[in-house]
Image 1 (cartoon, helix red, strand yellow):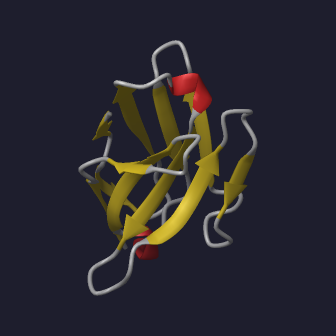
Image 2 (cartoon, rainbow, N blue to C red):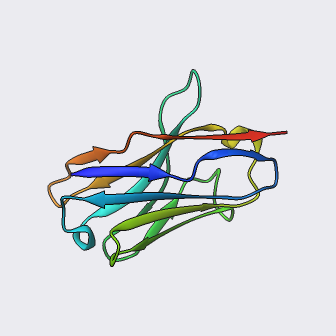
Length: 115
């Protein structure tokens, strides 16, 4: 299984970014896809998840601002991030969990929000 993330960058507060996570080596439609983030000096934390059945869940800190989606045709998950805040600054990691609850991680993409 390989996960390749893209879409990070530097944005001003209030701006938007869309992260992408392209998966390969697995039947994408059968797995849950999630996003986590890790800020400097902090533990990695949950951001959002979308199940194989397209149910979604979000951390309270991003509800109403971030939206997770998936396109099974191109085996890609997305995280649309709106109204970004400086506290959203972190390395964002894509997560894939299969039916055996095995986790796979992407390499991470940096998101920096300036005030």
